[in-house]
Image 1 (tube, one colour):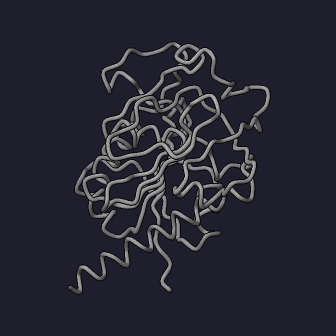
Image 2: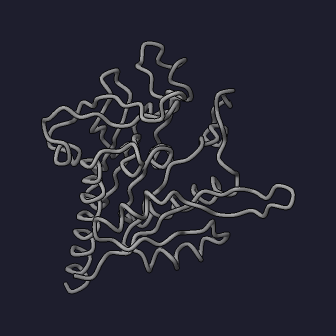
Length: 249
């Protein structure tokens, strides 16, 4: 079987002094895609929508990586002092990329701020700072413990249930923003016991789209977390098979 080609957006660092600007991505993302049978391709922050469209024509799916914080002012909200903004060039590109992915109903997997962007693009919104917006919530970020983990409550009949089943599970947690109102057409399929959203899945019939607030690609992930990537690749293959049938018909 031909391996699906999966695009990965990337982070961006502006030039400082003699240091040039550059694009980079954590190896966990492309290593995970490779391990589950995909071919990863890094997507730079392209300047023209036509170039994005042409590139997406050659991809079977996209993984949206995590990173710093989205600028809430672009969605009509105030800037909270705790927010550490993404590089403007990356955020502007990512927003255009996700809009086009949504229009094309292209398979997509958003991780961390990638899930948050998927949610706001489709009409949802975000908690800007969990300790203030949900004062009774568990800690979701521990600067002294990058391996900080918490349990999940999984929705039955979901992709997340296929991954984790009924056993006790714990996922990494390293965020202070989170999904608040989930976008129309999406369902929350995993929460922390305190109610904070940890995974969403599309219920739009012709669109395979998922998101996790936790990071299944990170060094702090478990071996079981890799199964999320396996499910994503299976969904990409299923979408490709359906499109092939429709084209033949």
